[in-house]
Structures are given as C-alpha cells and as structure tokens.
Length: 273
Image (cartoon, rainbow, N blue to C red; front, side, top):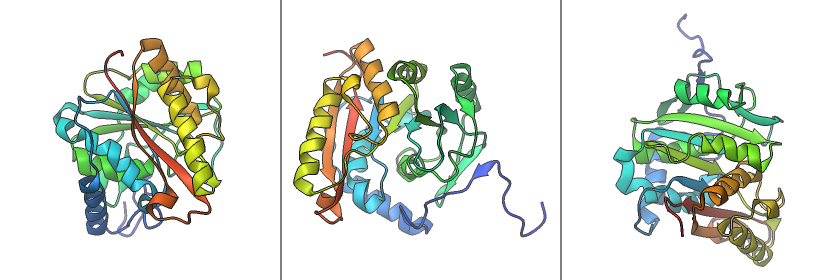
C-alpha cells in the first residue's frame, strides 16, 4: 500500500463519528466514561443479553449507559459480543453480517469474529458490508463496549430486517447463553411524539417486552423491532425474564420535549421467574 492510500476495505471506518458521538479519541473516551459514571446500575449477575438504544449519545447515551454499566463487574467474563440491530439506510431481508475483518471507531479497531460469522452464515445469514457501511445502530454501541471491555473482545454485528420472530429467535439462540458471549439488541422506541405521548407509548412497549409478547410489537413501537421481537420470542421459549433498566426519552436528556424519541434499556437474566 502506497503512502497516503486509504486503509484497505477490510476495516469498516466509522460512519457517524462527529455526528452521533465525539470524533476526537480523548473527548470520546471522557464522554463515554462520564455517561457510565453517572449510571446507577442495580447489582446483579451478568445478563445473557442487553437491549440498548442507538441515537446520538447526548440523547440516548444515559439510557444506554444504564445497561452497559451493568457489565462492569463482569468484564473478565465477556470475550465475544454478538450485536443485532436494524437497518435505516440500506434495505435487507433477513440477517446480514459483515465481510470486514474489523470495525473501527476513534478509540481503535474491534476485530470481527470469523468463527461467530461462520456460525451465523450456517444459520442463514448473508455476508455483505453494504448494509453496515452507513448504519449507525450498531456502530454507536462500540465506544461503550470499548470503554467497558477494553481490547479483549471480538464482535459480530448482525443487521436484521424483514425476518419473522421465529427465524430471528433461532439465529439469536445460536449465541444466547454461550459462556463468554454477550448478546446485544439495538433499538429505539417511539419516534417524534410529544413527551407525554411518548412516555405513554413507551411504557406500553416496555410492558410488552417484559411480558414477552413479540406478536404485539410493531415498527411503530421500536425501530429495531425485528431483532427485538426475536429476542422476546427466544426468551419466551426459554422462560428467561426481561428486566427494565431504564426508560426515558430525548426530552428527558437533551432534546425538544415537543418531538421526542423514546429509549429503553433492558436485560435478559439467566434464569426463570
């Protein structure tokens, strides 16, 4: 590679650094650390899965931090993260994993786990970098993971759309509960209602998640409803309880209360009711 040439395409470059989160490494590290420090997680065992929002970190970061802070006592137990999220820009059907060897943020590169990718492909996932290239829903999780887990983890990002709850549950079930593996689902909740309406709608959605009724969930409730619905279906099959960690809106954090986006953070616990 000649001097001045761009980095090879084996590394996905960040698409939303400087827009959804700070682009300068020191500022980003301080920002994420402050969000984590401000979170007040209830103590508990390592969750099997987390549900986290994916907006700009000034808006949804405090809610995401409520989930990620739950991991801090268990960092040594997490070697791999399989993250499921929606697509906002490039349409897909089913599940799509990246071909890239690593994803980069201003904090460094996170290696994509080839063994996890092969298992996802064996479960029917396609391999394509194009849906992932402009997508923010999973990228914005990486700075949190990097600050919480350090450099000692591998990643499999999975974009999911137009897939049944059963098939999504089957794919997530390939990884859920495996020792050393954390499952993430990325979703925001209601979009562009006034604060009171959003709180009412999001409370109803949270109750739907807690009661594990995937058939009651739609795209109006959560933009990441395809993977979230799969996690709910899987939790219902295995009788795994959801725990609500945080439920707020952009109007509660940094946004206009007349038009807000809702955010929820949930954990799937290891054990039945």
